[in-house]
Image (spheres, protein in one colour):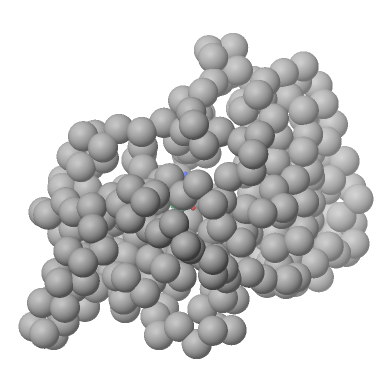
Length: 282
Ligand code: AMP
């Protein structure tokens, strides 16, 4: 496995692979890799001849009050995980490599980016769309892999690829959880012991909501109440949002009719965690 920090080195490597007729899979990440990221890399390895993993904590997608400075980083650990999972190339650019001093072009989106996380993170998806577009242009993959953990991000990227005719396929991968149900996240490292226990309230509330959907409940207000009642019992938890939306358009629904995304964002202490499930009506 190779590890490079410049755009030129990525381009040269990918060009050589393409000349040999090899397919390229791509997994964009912000590093501090865990089994969630690893599942994406493993799927990419199983479906492509060569896999590129990018590790870049993208300043453009963080708001001024957010955790850019403290976001966890561990390139040695990430390198080991990528190597043992079968990646062929790590791309870990500096912000200066990605954004030249005169940088002034952006990829932005209406609609899908305005609700859910977009409400409290108004500039987030512009940063995500811009950096992912740049990375797609640099890596030129055949397939790119994104986690359903960030369900809105996955929907936004699929829309962007379709709208802008980007020549690759986006593949969504299921949420990987800790044994006790907490969705794996690089941000879990911020949690104290007490907060780590409190954080279980996210998956517990979603499990209860899922059970209600499966028992035939179709009223969104009821599903939201189930979640809110469980979340509010936990003193360390503060709700950012509890939403039930159409899984494709991400527009709010009042009755469950087909496929819905049930998504929550909750502060546990100062750490903002997200989780979700998609319910497909039978
Ligand atoms: P991040 O490094 O947090 O930007 O995540 C990089 C990619 O890994 C994104 O596509 C995430 O959705 C995905 N991912 C992060 N955590 C998980 C998880 N627990 N299960 C599945 N995918 C995940």
